[in-house]
Image (cartoon, rainbow, N blue to C red; front, side):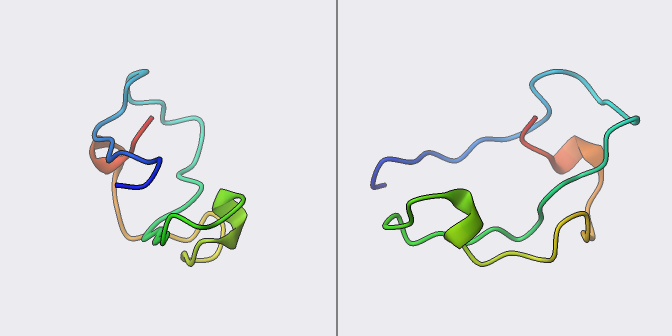
Length: 54
């Protein structure tokens, strides 16, 4: 990887109050910000909290 690592599971527990912000984030490693990576629209997802990165 180039300055990144894969993360799994909710590190801070399953918070059902907050939504899942991003899904299917795909970065090449050259982005300045996560905003520059391709992803579903904000708060649009097809996953559950047990899949999030926390």
